[in-house]
Image (cartoon, rainbow, N blue to C red; front, top):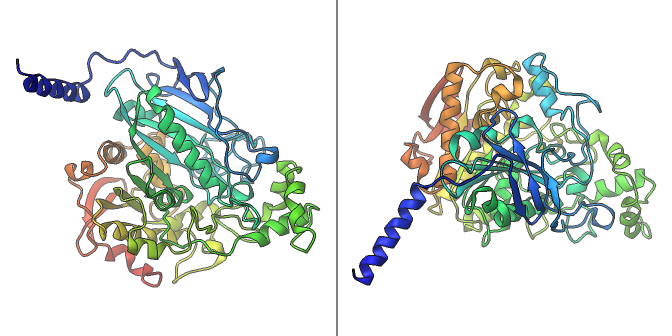
Length: 512
C-alpha cells in the first residue's frame, strides 16, 4: 500500500474516532482528577446521578491581606482534596437575612430567595470554579460552556441552583464550568492609585485560563470552549471580547441580557466611593496626606465592616450612593465601545446575544428601580434598558462578517410566575440550564419541557460549532431589516418564531 494511501486512511480513521468515540472512556463518577489545583475527588450530582460534579475548586490564592484589591494570583497545589462542597460566596450584602435558607413557598418567594442568595456563607477565600461532566459517554473531548453569573457586579454567586450544570452535562454531551469572582468594592474598587481597578474581570479571566489548562482532565476540550453569562455576567462576557481580542481562549460568546452596548463605563474612576468608604471606616479620605494611606488601613478591616459601610448601595437593582462597577481603565475595560465596534476592535468570534421580553418584570419581586447608576434613559428605566443592547452588539459583529444570532426569550410558565407580564430578567436562565424544576421544586409543563430542549440544544450546539451550528438547526443569521430575531416561547408555549426588530426596539431609539 502506498504511503499516500496509508496517510489518507489514517486521517479518515482519526476523523471517524473523533466523531464516534469507541470504546467509551473509562470513568467512575466522581473519580480523582489531577489538576493544577490538586488531586480532586468529586461526587455524583444530587439530581443527575451519572454526572460527576467537582465543587469549590480554588483557581486563585485567597485575595486577603496584601492580595485584597490586587490582581488575582494563580493557585497551585499537589495536595489531595475533596471537591464536594461549594466554597463560600464572595462578600456581598444580600437581600436574604444571614443564616436563612432557601424556602419553597410561592414561586415569588423561591425566586426571591435565589436572588437574595439565601443559605450563602461568605468569605474572601471564594475564588473557585465548579465543574459538571459525564466523560463515560459521548465524545472523548467535549465542548465546554463557561458561565459568569449576574448580580449587577454587586452581588452574585456560583452556588445558585439556577446555575447547576448537571442537566446540560447529562443530556447534551458538554462540560459546564461556573466561577466565583469578586464583586462590589472588593472586585471593582475604583481607587485611583491601584494598578488594577477591575479585579472581578481579572478573576474571570484567570478562571477561564484555569479551564483551558485543566478541563481536558474532566473530558472537556480546551480548544472548544465558549463563554456565556447573564445580566452583569452577560456584560462581562461581552467585555472579554474587547479585553482580549488577540487571545480570547474561548471560541464564541453568549451574552444574555447584558452587553457593553447598553452603557460604556465612565473614564472617571469611582474614587469618590472608595474614599467615602475609607472615611466611614476611619481610614481617611481623599484629603492630602490621607489618600495614600487608605489602602493599608482598609486591608486591615474585616470584610463585614467594609460591607456594612457600603450597605446602602449594594442592591444590584438599585445602585445609589457608594457605587462599585467596572470602570474604564484603558486596559481591559474601555469608555469607547461604540468606536471599537465600528473599527472591529474585538475578538472576531461568533455571538448569540439576546434578552427577555420583560426585563423590568423582575420589579414584581424587587419593586420599581431607577435606571443604571440611578438615571433613567430614553424613557426606559431599570432593568428594561438591558433589552436595548442586543441589536447594537449583534450589528457590530454582523458589520464585520462575523456569524451572529439574536434571540428574544418570551416564555411564561407556572413555575416561573412571579407576577410579571412577560419573561422577567433572568427567566431564560432556568430554561437554558434545564433547571426550572430543580430551582422551584415545581413541575415543568409539557410545553415548557419542549422549549427547554429547544433552547438547551441551541446553546450547546453553539458551543459545539459556534460558526455554523445554529444555521444547521435552522436559525437565521441576524439581519436587522429582516425577521431574524429568534423568539423563543410565549405564554405556556414552546413556539419558536422569527420576528423583526422593530417590534421590540422602538423604545430604544433614543439610546441609538
